[in-house]
Every structure is written in C-alpha cells, then in structure tokens.
Amino acid sequence: MSLFARAKRNIPPVKQVKLKLVHIDFWSAVKTGLLVTTATGIATIVAFFLIWLLVSQTGLFGSLSTLVNSVIGGGAGASQQGVDVAQTLSLPRVMSFAFTVSLFNLVLGTALVGISALIFNVIGRLTGGISIGFTNN
Image 1 (cartoon, rainbow, N blue to C red):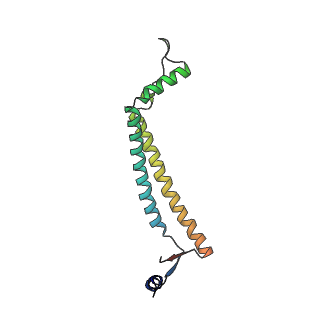
Image 2 (tube, rainbow, N blue to C red; image 1 turned 135 degrees about the horizontal axis):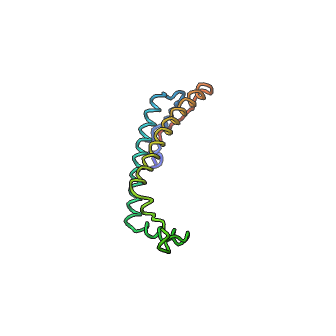
Image 3 (tube, one colour; image 1 turned 60 degrees about the vertical axis):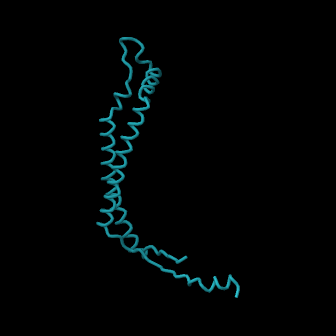
C-alpha cells in the first residue's frame, strides 16, 4: 500500500455544522456594547495623554508656536502677543477634550449597538435569519 493511500485512510470525514442566527438579545447586546465602548473610551483617554506627552517632551509645541506666529505675523513687536500653542493645548484642556469624546462615544456607541440589535431582530424575523456553515478541516 502506498504512503498516499495510508494517509488518505487516516483522514476523518469532513463534518459540517450549519447554524442559523435569528435573534440577538437586546440587553446582552447593550451590555456588551457598553463594555466595548468603555474599553475604547479608556484607550482614547490613554492615547490622548501619550500623544500629548510625546509632543510635549519632543518640544514640538515650541516649533508649532514659532510656525503659527510666523504665519499670522504675531509676536514681532512688544505690543503684539503671539500664539502660545503649549498654553492653548495644555494637559487639562487636552484631557477634558479626551474625556468628552470618550463620554460621547460611550453614550452614542451603546445606543447604536442596541438599535442595531433591534433592527437585526426585525430583519431576522422577516427573512429567517442568517445561516452560517462551519466545516472541520
């Protein structure tokens, strides 16, 4: 008997499983959406802090202030005051903006997940759901 024939004999038959997704529980979807948007909100706040820290430590705020002042012509004389990007984009302002964006994302994302679950349930009831097939490779 050849090696190929022995290998072919040892292969189990392919099993196929078909599942049909018809209903998504509304509250489970909302709870899962709340957890996911909370995690993305925390990641957003951390990312804003790390980016601000990177820009602050590299001295990019000073370069941006010089660039903005040269473009708008501010800060040349004693009577004119230039734009200070470091003061405008201070850490408390950046973090409050990050918190606001995260809170908005949390509320809107959770609501959209719930609405999406309701829409899927209506469409699943009308069409019979989504059929998914799995095979054993």
